[in-house]
Amino acid sequence: NKKISHNLMHQNYNEINIILINTHTSRSNSYKSGNINNNDIISKKINNVIISKFIDLSDKCGVGYILSNGDVGVHFNDGTKMIRIKCTLNFIYLDNQGKITLINTKKKVDNKDYETKINALLLFNKTFIKNSKYRKSFDVDPKLHKKSIDLYVKKWVKSQFAYFFLLSNEKVQVIFDDKSQVIFDFQSKKTIYINKSKQMTMQNINTTNFGNEEMNKRVKYTKQVLTYMIN
Image (cartoon, rainbow, N blue to C red; front, side, top):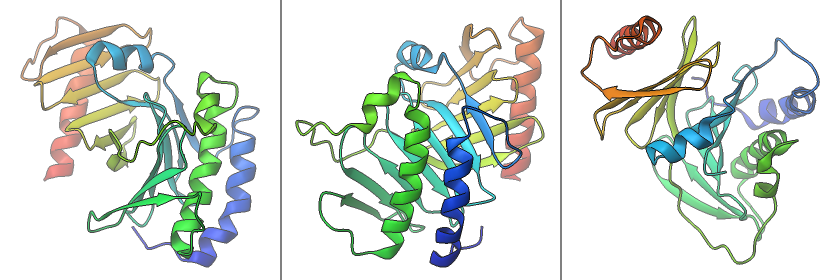
């Protein structure tokens, strides 16, 4: 991915703002939005943080997402990442070498790159919390002093039928266009499938026949794309 210049980012903010403001009122070809309504329940069932919603604005700046724990992140086109910790003024920034920087916006942010990306993240944040239970995640709770994150998106890719997210907790979360999902958990060696009706099935990651034709197809497709990406 090409590095984002400050000028380009600033020029795009007005466009981004307009697109995000209209996210809940109209469809636009400028972005792809994924809203997986049941993922907070699924997150509790599997006892892990996963992506709840995402918006693809990679033609402008990157992909924004909100996690099931309420943290909001952006994977920018230049490969850097930023995550806002829920209900705090703390932002975690990861550069391309994996260096982690804690930024507290209660203090003046002198770094122009940080300031630019914080503004972009806050636009995504406002969109995710509109008309949702995440509304309070934008409010700052002075009692909270959390300075670390549970999860972030390390890499992502769009295939013909789905978005593939490589998560920092050794999971791959695949969100299909019809909102069904496949999650590979390489820690617990489990394959998790969530169908269009939000019903969840969990099997061993090495299972090849799940007794469900739809699940078989989705898992097979996911493995094929991942194999192609690795090779």
